[in-house]
Length: 102
Image 1 (tube, helix red, strand yellow):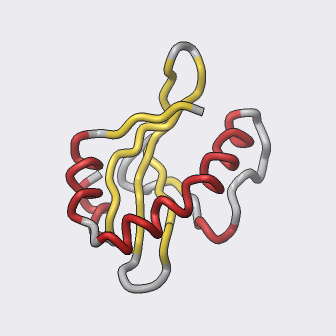
Image 2: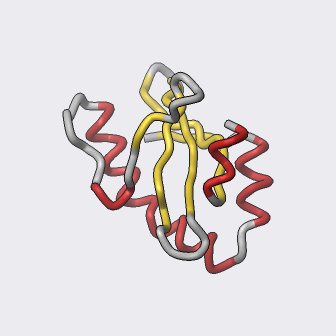
């Protein structure tokens, strides 16, 4: 599955401490596999540990939790199409405050 990032995501990611960048990257393989299952129509593709759910204040935007420890690691994303295939656009990454500015 293809993905892209927004400039806001890129800025957020650069501001993360290296150990938090590493924690986020460690979650990507599981997230990717679940996103492929979701795009295929699987009714329950997301691992419980990622706590994937829609962002209430932003239609079409989803969040996942990539760390429950300090810091509270969250990322927001949305489904898009790239070359006619489902893809992910990562919007923001950081702590819970990324949900305030999606």
